[in-house]
Length: 304
Image (cartoon, rainbow, N blue to C red; front, side, top):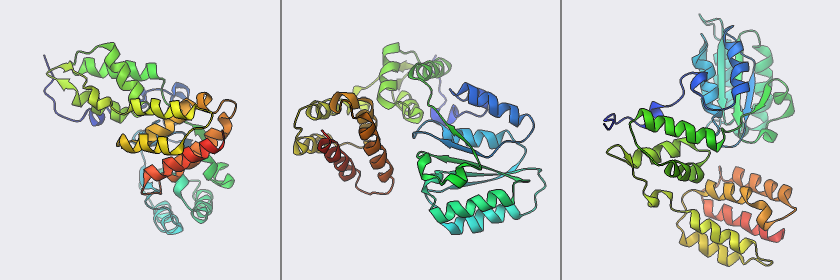
């Protein structure tokens, strides 16, 4: 019988304990031991977007008896945020024995803000812990990194994700073909939110009726790769392919170019990774995502 619960799957199955957090078993075990003593270290979680860094940080707070402050540094990146909000929170007396500050997307903080944060971490080391998350750890100043346990958060494997999605389908009484789960994982990995939204949109009276239109967009990437593999790729041809495809997920292009680098730039994976990383970071600041991607394509072509 089909489940009539209309709540969003990505909210319903958001991890509420470390046990329900998928992947990173060794890291979860280490953190759990600290939580048992109602304390944690200062952490800097880094890794690609969609790997669960923010969720992990929030789970730490949820499992501590503490007061906490959450700040998204992509919105509040200046030194005023650190001096006013963070310092103010850390300095105010609390009925709890511990306070925790989560600074999400800390790689957006200015150098001045990071330097100020380093001083605050030292000043309030007895009462306050800090959890920083970022995509690009090299953008965090060394003195700040040295005051945290720096940990790369690795996304769960595609197999682990597929098992997790299948389990959710079973709980929701949604029948499915394993190949359909595989298509969803391959399309949206590692973004679990998009996978769950796709399952919910494809749920037709208890059947996972996958509409290929929800997975549209992969064929144009093959065309881009075919052109890049040529001895002299044509920039204008790739630009037209992308323009005609009405791309709305440019993050997908970054992932695809990284995963297939050996096919179009053999022996230059390091160079390609640097360029992809640089333009992926710039995408956070630029309004026109397509221009940013085409700038990357041009740089890759020039390195042939």
